[in-house]
Length: 124
Image (cartoon, rainbow, N blue to C red; front, side):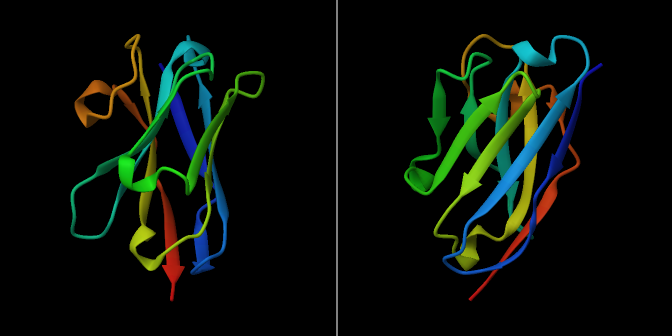
């Protein structure tokens, strides 16, 4: 069984950076594709970014490219989502997700494992 635990959320002002972490544990967690999704209150959960198990391949939502950076440290079984130039519209619960598939996907249905989420609130 795989467990994903997010951390690093909080309240920040617009323009400030924030780094989210997702620690993975369980069998084969180091070979999972890991991704971040976010869900603003009252809206659908949307794809943010995904990274291959080697860390060499990444995919980002077009609207977030250049502001968010995803990286991976398999020695620590952790992925990091660096958020920069945050805007109030980035306010959401951010979820870590894991997939056993062999390619990067932005579809929520491609991910079998989910964390509990961490709240990010950006004030104007």
